[in-house]
Amino acid sequence: MGICQGCHAGCCRSFAIPMTGADIIRIERDTGRTFWDFGCRWADPEGSIAANYAPHFFFHDEPQTPFVICLKHEDSSLFPGSSRCKFLKESPPDAEHPLGRGECGIYQSRPAACRVFPTKFDVQNELPILHSVPEYGREQKLPQYKLCPRQWTPADVDPIDSARDLVVARYEARFFSQLARLWNQKVGKWDVFPEFLRDVYARRVQEVPQEQYAEEPHILKIADFQQAQRRA
Image (cartoon, one colour):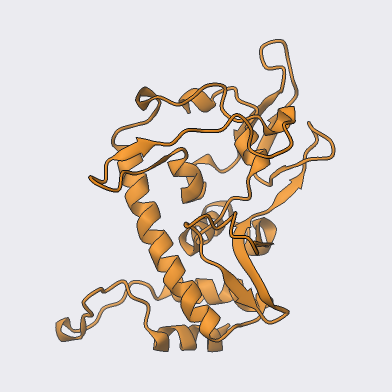
């Protein structure tokens, strides 16, 4: 975990963490929990959560509100009055860690947004590059929202895993964005959304005759979407 080792996890306290459908299915599969245990929809009228990465979804009960699908937050026991990612494990402060320590409870299954932080693809040559991390994750400059203890360096990032994680994150974000566009063409109910996702991803790998391949095989067909909505 490198630079994250021993940190109080200000990022897990400051940010709403977007999830793709693949993230959701993986967490369900690896933890045995259902979406309702860890997932939520976060209103994002200004687009600050989506941040050109996560798609917006609309639902029957609030048809004018754009939502981002995120990990739930819960009340923090270490910093009363603030919240944290549901899966963040908190340890009390000690002499070496005055803000305590935070540890991800699903580190091997964490969402792609967590895996790639704080890297992105360079637009020109698609090499992983670091983006600067602000001192605080929220406007309130409180101790719990303080982010990384120092700026990241290339030595803090695995040169193999970082590129792989960025490729996967980009692919899944594109697929999920397409899924969102199809969902929003025929807005559904929030309570059937998880079942819709499971149905779509269960049929994601298909065997079809060679001549039926689309130019982009990963494109989700409208017929698949409609069938998934009917099942949900």
